[in-house]
Image 1 (tube, rainbow, N blue to C red):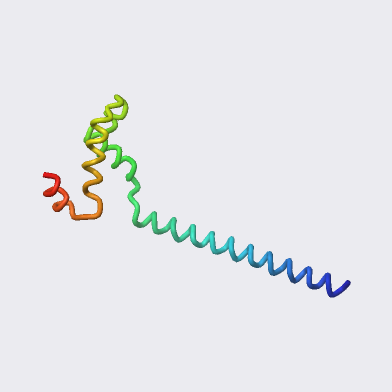
Image 2: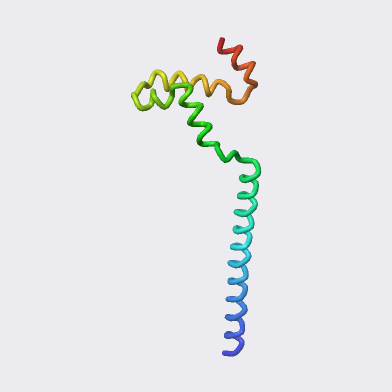
Length: 93
């Protein structure tokens, strides 16, 4: 009976240690990602995106259910993914 109780306590300690280590690792990862985002991310990212969409008339087109305008904007935007802007521009011209 004593051996079983000791084993049970050791097993619980190991489980608690694993849970604690996992929580600590997750907390650390969250802190690292947060710091990176604070250093590299723009505080005005959403505002900048909205301004770009407004200048392209996309938000107005969405409000007016103008799918043609939204589609044209989307195709133009997707054309610039993965290659240089100049190459994409030349190709689309």
